[in-house]
Amino acid sequence: MLKGKTALVTGSTSGIGLGIAKSLAAQGANIIVNGFGDSKTPQDELAALGVKVAYHGADMSKPADIEDMMKFAASKFGRVDILVNNAGIQHVSNIEDFPPERWDAIIAINLSSAFHTTRLAIPAMREANWGRVLNIASAHGLVASAGKSAYVAAKHGIVGMTKAVALETATTGVTCNAICPGWVLTPLVQKQIDDRSAREGITVEQAQKDLLGEKQPSLQFTTVDQLGGLAAFLCSPAADQVRGVAWQMDGGWTAQ
Ligand code: NAD
Image (cartoon, rainbow, N blue to C red; front, side):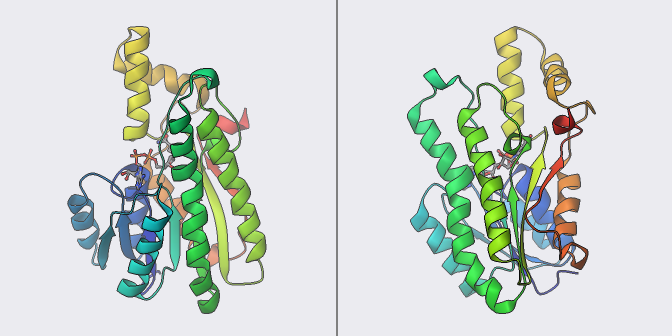
């Protein structure tokens, strides 16, 4: 279905980004991987699906790096047809104790990076009259939790930007949508479970149960494969008129 298309997935060396990259590769899309840590294993796993794979290590907090990555993508594969703005970080503390540099980093990586990739990707998408921008927001793009002021601000911001870009591209073959996962068991969430276990003197298993019980009525994690399936759907012709949505996949979190 996506053969001949190129997907750039920010933060795809791990977690949700890698899951979405695999799902798009399974549909035939070539992939540009981005993110920190081991980049070879994800590239090998994606190449095993029979698509072309390239890697760019741009730091999403740095606009100049992002510009370089977008130029690299164009030179490697012609253009970016599918842009998945996924890279993200978290920091938990009450606002009075929130380190200003963590606020700046979260806004830069979770929100401003998507502004830069999107502004640079849209012209070629418009020219081709086809494109998909998928912004990985969060249940925290729709509702808040204590201790997450920066993350909630960034995720609400990206949901807003999604709607604006969807309107700007509404008469074209380019769509822009957000995906709002609930808890997904990735390194980003494992850290919160480990911190909770240490803070409350409970087992990691109990901390995991409590974390789900507090917010996610299904009491089950959303999986990266499920998110990959939704991303593939949003890239399909059936989703041509899905524009500007913030689509929850959160086990009922935001239905409460
Ligand atoms: P993760 O920590 O497993 O992956 C984050 C990815 O982003 C990694 O590839 C990492 O290398 C990359 N990254 C981090 N900082 C970067 C930077 N400065 N430049 C480039 N790459 C960078 O986390 P995840 O849980 O897979 O999160 C992915 C996205 O999904 C994030 O935007 C997160 O907010 C969102 N999300 C996660 C959950 C969850 O429960 N895990 C829920 C809702 C939304």
